[in-house]
Length: 122
Image (cartoon, rainbow, N blue to C red; front, side, top):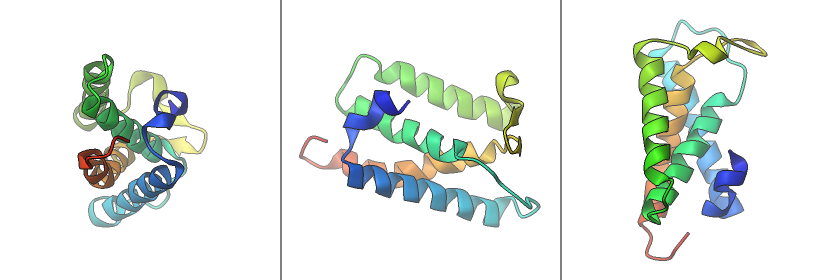
């Protein structure tokens, strides 16, 4: 995924996106998943990377942009409505917490949208 999106933002912007994604995951867990005792992994931040990268591809009207949009929204919707994707039933640290994927994507988009709206190309 990193190779697909690395050129979309500067290293500083990626750091901001990753921090925002992680902060959104933490906030989401504190507000909406109070029963959660633990969380291991970076899958939520990975979904944030995909969301921010997809937004950049949309902005530049790249041919893969709408495929990425459909995939990301479809995966997040599937996880929220049905549950864990069949191929990812367990991560290395325990069961997958799919809400982290949604929170991570939202957090990344909160900071990526202003970056995408800038006049200067990314």
